[in-house]
Length: 353
Image 1: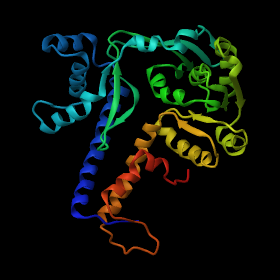
Image 2: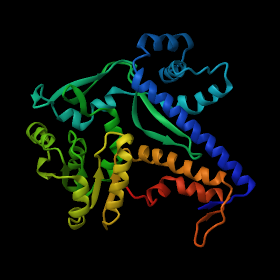
Image 3: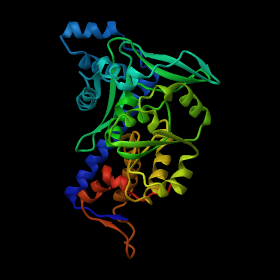
Image 4: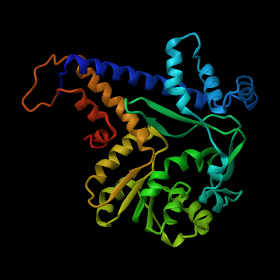
């Protein structure tokens, strides 16, 4: 590939590179805070800022978290700009009732018991504990805003521990990131990954959903689910579980079953998810007349975008030092480059995984 742009478009690529660098830097800073210092801000600290400066809790939280991340928003113009561009839109006080009224949480009761290596339990977010509650929001200039939430009061949610470590849960992040797939589910539904059955429960509630077939590799998860949770499903008759590998099923069985909609959720996060996402997309591309959604796809595309743009930027900086070969793609405009790293461009990218 050769990238040959005019001066105006070249400057726009340099500006885009700055945005990508800022995206990466802010993500690293906030991820470090959420993973290592998530309880640093207390309710007392927050309320003092709220009362002293007559400020809403979300803005006060943004100020405190930026300070905890080492930013000097009053004396450093660059930090001030980053604060207003990223931290302010990233931070949101969440309303507990928005989640406590969720149909799954209102219906499913988790038993207080140990099942082999698994234990049903209740986990909590402390007041003002920071956590990622949704996929990043992308602005038109490719600025990506992390979505960091907090509650003013303690918030409890169900979870399952494996050997003492949280393995599965139904918390705000799961609820938020599954809203679009649940809305899109229809007809004969296929779901890769069982978890605690949140997607299956919500999809089976819809009149437009005829059945939900779940492919799950772990037989212990299936036993736990079918013995303790599935009997509580109002539409349990719609649920069918197949104990097999997702990739094997996607390659050999799914093309012959005439599913109308497929949802994939077999990864923990973007760290282990990107390669599996790309592999499933490649397998699913061979299936006709079916719609596909993937859990945390916006986050996965964000990770892929960072990598793809880095490669394109290296080609751009080479200034076409090597002559174009016959049939080699030549990118001549900024818009062509942008189209390649857009969500649609990345979804259609041909990558072997």
